[in-house]
Image (cartoon, rainbow, N blue to C red):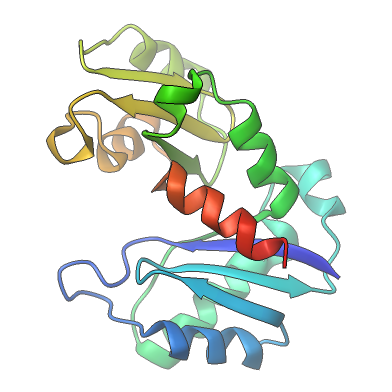
Length: 186
């Protein structure tokens, strides 16, 4: 069995797209996933599946359609759409390991996980921009970002990167990513 982490975008925000985490665990279990654990109300789930991670390495697509499977099950049960990103535990560990930030900044950084690789022209255009209190680095699967003044006052938000890069994305802070890895280790 391979361990995965699913990131649901936009659930339980301002009372919209409400999904209780206990219900999300039950939904994942109904899809045949094992060892399902959720973390905080923003839609994070660690689970095991017999699906192979090989497809991720070969095609850079979500793990064998697990993202689509989860998203369709949510739509069927709740009658709304939720974008879902699924990554292997190893992929999340690699994302954290390759952060460009110092340890001090890493602990306060965010990871904007990209569903697909952004077009090079979009990346080059954004890299020309800068704000004094927001450092970022765009890779094929993540935008590493450090908000010196905190994410609440950020100009370069998840929505901004989604629009400029023309890709679906969801953001998590370092603490959440580290906690999900910790849960996956058990």
